[in-house]
Image (tube, rainbow, N blue to C red; front, top):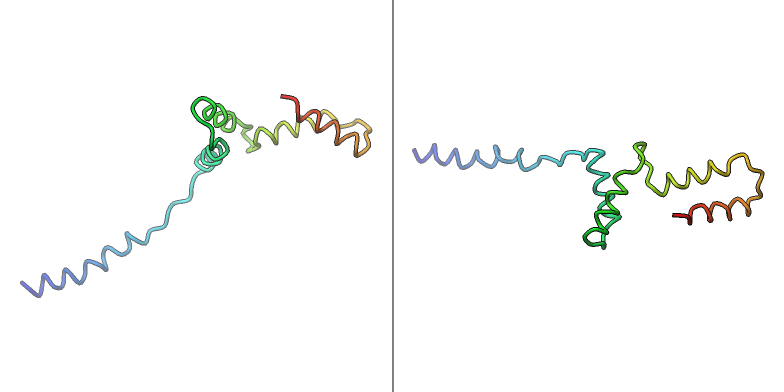
Length: 99
């Protein structure tokens, strides 16, 4: 009986080791997005936090942030206009500053 008990005690670490060595599963795209949005809203409290996080989560489905979407809109608004580099830069700044 003692030999059986000793064998079981020696075999226990071998059986338990694979369970301890399991790696974490890859996060889904939604989990990554939620983490990023929560990080962007860090430092805010209450309703401000929720508003910032929700705006981030509602960003365009193609993965663009609200800033990227706004930049794209401003850029497309200026498309076709013959502007110098400085004029275009100034108009982009003005467009991006609008709420």
